[in-house]
Image 1 (cartoon, rainbow, N blue to C red):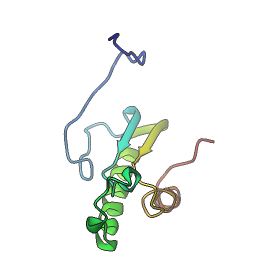
Image 2: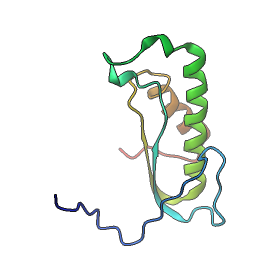
Image 3: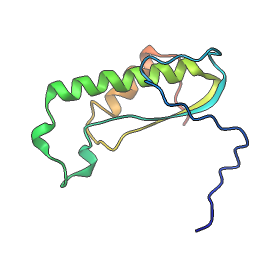
Image 4: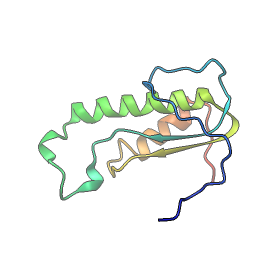
Length: 110
């Protein structure tokens, strides 16, 4: 297979708890991908629905929001943050994005 290149010349991958991690240089990233843990509801019909509870969804949305908050701290003004989940539950998608747009220094790129 041929290697796939995004054209990026400087890439930094960081292994850390993204809900609490802070770099020594806030705003130094051009882009961030928040591939957040989720309920996996988008994997239906393979999903074990017994493990999807209201409390579980609430805990996941708190973690998802914390990851987005870290990204807004680390990505420079005018940078790009991509939020991705494999869920179609509104709590993890539309509602979380609305909350982030209201409470974090973000704007939607249309």
